[in-house]
Length: 159
Length: 159
DNA sequence: TGTGCATTGATATGTTATAACAAGGATGCT
DNA sequence: AGCATCCTTGTTATAACATATCAATGCACA
Ligand SMILES: [Zn+2]
Ligand SMILES: [Zn+2]
Ligand SMILES: [Zn+2]
Ligand SMILES: [Zn+2]
Image (tube, rainbow over all chains, first blue to last red; front, side, top):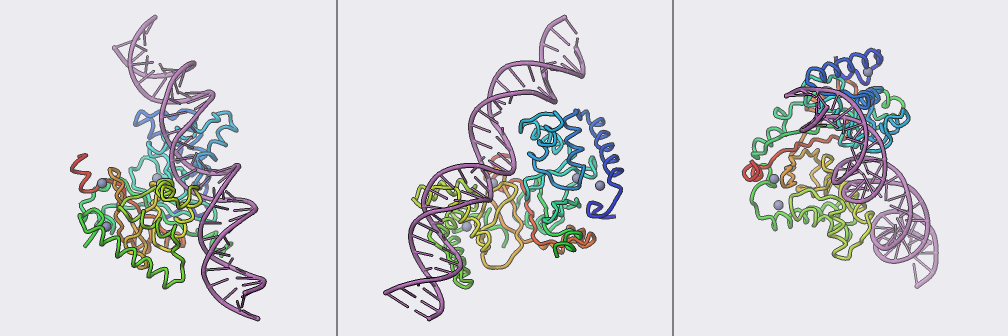
């Protein structure tokens, strides 16, 4: 059941169902998935990889959807706030969420070989860091959990 | 015993002992803690706060230790690789390590009010993310664990 | 139909980080 | 001491990531 991102799968179906879930989310919450935003999400989802804002912008501008940085950043802002995409802090890059809507505290496995990203779950309060926070009287609002390394495919090729 | 960074403490002594440990580390491992690097570490340690590379550069250049970005980035590179400082990915900023030498996988509590940072321990392999990695055949090389929120002091003032 | 608000277009700028190459200085060997 | 080597620093330039600002457009709802 885990880390579909690193496994062979019917990605066309994967994308279709994710986009459907995203649209459902937006409809349910009164958010407007405009053409630029929709296309940005599709681009982010087209591979399970992290994409820089300017990479996204290049795709968008090639399709006539805007050529200036704010176009990309605004779309990314919307998607991240809506929970349809995530920012990978360790890469300053962005990835489409594979299960939008489900309210989740994501954790990521990031391959340094191919930049593929798999999304897992984390539970900030139950972790060791959560214990430290409680002991220190620190109130956690957001957590970043990212692991860099090599995915199965890149372990074989790169060793 | 935990999160000295958020508590009142004799910080002068705190710094002295940390710098001593850092020097011992460098001596033991044949690393050269040159004047720029030493001063950079002192600056990072002077408060338990994350400092941007350009903030550090401003301090250094005010003291005549170099005025161009590479000066700061090279010092930071050295300190991070030597385990004497850590990068806070969520802030693109850097913080001095409070227990240099001890080989550790750090996790951070980051106050969004005052940018204070407390260092805790994490155990990548034993976490839920570690389970996900094993299940996916992913080999973790480095982990980023950061929690943003409010420290005790900022909870009182800011609410 | 008009008012307000979210979205987009466009220009400019701010912030973070690295490439590339020349010069200086420590270390170790003969 | 002379020399080679390697690490470190100086300097210029540029790349990569991100936001401020203001004008224009379009949709939503009274
Ligand atoms: Zn897929
Ligand atoms: Zn997600
Ligand atoms: Zn201290
Ligand atoms: Zn604080």
